[in-house]
Image (cartoon, rainbow, N blue to C red; front, top):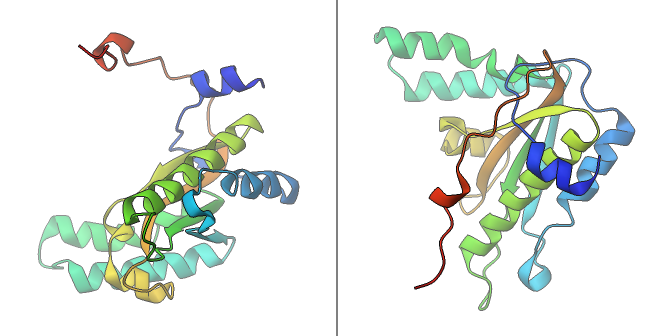
Length: 188
């Protein structure tokens, strides 16, 4: 796949199945993550790979978070609590992307978080270029203190997303949904 086709046709696929990335595909995905802009060469990233039975461990972390933060008496919350355990099972592999903030006079926090976000996008692009599918998710578990503590993150670390990877369940190609003219203009 050439770079322009990749950039113009990449899409998020939320319905994923096995197989996930092979060892070789994962290596390329990992290399892509480390090639993103990194002002000051701070390497403000950490990635946690979750696959196989470890997905159940992540589900238990989500479950404990849901119990702490939701009301089981509320029918909507009760459903979310039960659903929490199953969320990591939606794909064969999840890569948790974390911005590891380092105080620096010339590199503000936002640039470090953006660098970690770029890494997620690069990993998804690398997966898509290799015939895999994926979706970048955040949600309440990305900002949850319980989840951060369970993953041994410190208070300055930020989970920028969960990259779910696998194979698409269908060949549905999403249409281009945005008009360029709505988002780009010239300086007046």
